[in-house]
Amino acid sequence: MSYQPLLLNFEEAAELRKALGTDSLLGKALARDIKQADAYMQEVGIEVPGHGEGGGYEHNRHKQNYIHMDIAGRLFLITEDQKYRDYIVDMLTAYAKVYPTLESNVSKDTNPPVKSSTRR
Image (cartoon, rainbow, N blue to C red; front, side, top):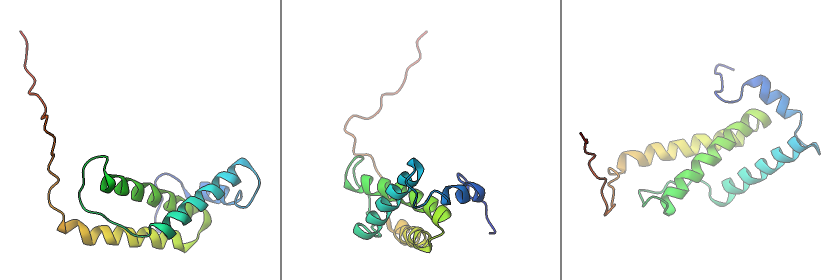
């Protein structure tokens, strides 16, 4: 490979790959992550919402997209299944298309921050 993953190197991924399909705690955790990632990819797919309030639907969708891209990246390294790589590429491509159309995110907070004062 011509790159080095940041949080999980190839040797670690190869060790984790050995646990796939086993009844060990690690094998069960990997099976859970695979099931979760596959369900998200199937049910949600590629959805890039616009701006929204913090804690609102859009905010949470962006957060979930990030979480599942991270999981998919790790699963790609561990399982070597191209569907996880393709999902990430498709999601990032969708974000790249939407990003230029988004306006600046303006805070709608009715209680702006207070200027700090210095006491002497």
